[in-house]
Structures are given as C-alpha cells and as structure tokens.
Length: 392
Image (tube, rainbow, N blue to C red; front, top):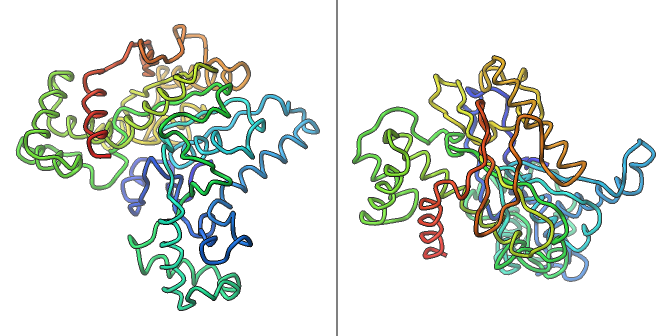
C-alpha cells in the first residue's frame, strides 16, 4: 500500500538519491487527481464520493479479501493491513473509514501518518483549477471523463503547486479527520504497530550529507522548521546535548527527520493509545546503512528490506554479514507475529511493551542488541511537539 506518489525507482540507495523529488506530507496519502478529484461541489450527488475513490478502492479490495480469502486458506477474521510512507497514511485513513470497519483486524503504519485531510472547500478549489487548466470549466464533467489520462497528467504538471489532490474529509467516506483531534473510535479495538527511522530526511536529495559549519546549520534549521534565530538555536543546542558527538550534518538530519516524520507518527500513536482499546506498539529503526559511505545514516524506507527479510534485494542499502541477517530475522518474525496475534514479538527481541502516554515504551531496532527505551530523546520530542503546536 505504498503511495504511487512516493514509489522509488529502485531498491538501492544511489537510485534513491538520484530520484526526482516527490512531494509528501504526513497529512496526506499521496497526490493524484485520478483517486482524489473532489467534484461534488461541481457535479452534485453523482460525484459525492469522487474525492475518495482511491481509498474506496482499498475498501473494495478488503471486501474481496473478506469474501474470498478462505478459498486460498486464509482467515477472513484475521486480516492485517500495512503500508509505508504514503501507504502508512492510507492505513491511518482506513482506520477512520466506516466502510472499512471489520475488514481488517491489525494495522501497521511505517514511517507515515494521516492526522488530517483536505477540507471539501480546499479540494473543490483544486478541482476547479484542474478543470480550468483543461479548458473545460465547471460544466465539462462528461468531457473530463472522456479525456485520456495523459491529458490530465499534463494539466496537473502545468500547475504544480496550485493544486493538491489527496483524501478529503467529506463527511461521507471520511466523516472526520482520521487522527485529529483524536484517534478514530471505530478502530479502537484494532492493534496498531507504528514507528519511524532515525534519519528519515536523508531520503531527499536536498538533505545535506557532507560537512557544513554552524552558520549553515542554523540557516537550514530556520528554513526547515520555519523558525527564527532564537528558536532554531535552542533546537540545535537541545539536540547537541542529547546526541553528544553528533556533527552539524547529523544534527540537521535528526531535527528535520523529527520535524517531518517522528512528530506526527508519535502523535498518532499517542492518540490511538489514549482510546484505551487495543494496544499500540512503537518502534524506532536505528540501523545505520553503509550506502554512500554511510552518509545516508538511516533513511526513509531503509527498514523495508529488513521487515520483508529480503535484504539481498538491496545490497548497497543493507550491506551484509550475520548481524544484518539477524536483524532481518527478528523484524520479519515480529511483524508476522503481530499479524497472527496482535503482538510483535520474536526470538532475540526483548519483551515489547505497549506504548502508553506515561512510559512511551519504544523498541529501538538495530543490528546489535535491540532494546526497549522509555520515551527515547523525550526532551527533543517535547520541543518539536511544542514548536509544531505553535505553528498549527
């Protein structure tokens, strides 16, 4: 369930760094007019569900699984959905969709979250902008449906930044924002596994990998976090205190990764845990990749080969050796155990407690001995959360 907008062209790290930049937000699950063109404002009841047909396709697929999986030896009462990046956002959103209730029984969201979605008003503006770009105007819906896909893609590309297509909190398929201001009660009894990677932002080509000085670090942090000198300097100081020995590049990678990814992932986990229903389990993937001479550290998506136990498919990203395979064994076994039982446990891993607001137990997954930490780097978490709350 990885979003098409976030799909990488290859499995090796150099391919990631050469990839054309794609745009993604923790509040979305990808961006495409084919799945999320909200036309209800223009076309009325006939197009009432048009803003969420991409996700309704996911619901239809899950309904097919419910109706047919027994014929393949599967259990329709024990279905797990999981996704990474944009796919994680889809998982989060399905947890808030009444049509999906009962179609899955465990959920895994890796390096992604969906707290809020577009309003109908904002989605309608994007739809009208696309119609205008296509020269159709508000009365051209029948002509729109007859256009080739390439024409729509070209229109989207011509106005990049002026239109945004993603799930819509339409009051129908998605009655309310998935995880804002609270987690969806309709999936309270679904066990949830979620987490993020240490330096998610090194996935992006514009994240620095080479040495820089303190002045450059300050300017980059200000720009990325939308802060002034004092706030940015305070963040840098806090991260230096919490990560002794980290150079300027690593400090920036950590701040940008926490601001972009770790904050919404943990906020989503906290809100889910606050329901008091099924348990929430949180991990942090800390395994440093050898790719690019180690400069990528632990980028977005680097946990995937370990979770699937196919590290041989990504040798530059994963490296080799008994420790690498051992981590893949532990992670793939834990994920499979979660699908079977609702608890992620595996030989070689310590007991994995549920995530609760007080302790915030987090499994730190690494090539050596993985361990459980209570609220790891909690001061940094609190600082980023306060900053983001002030910017909301």
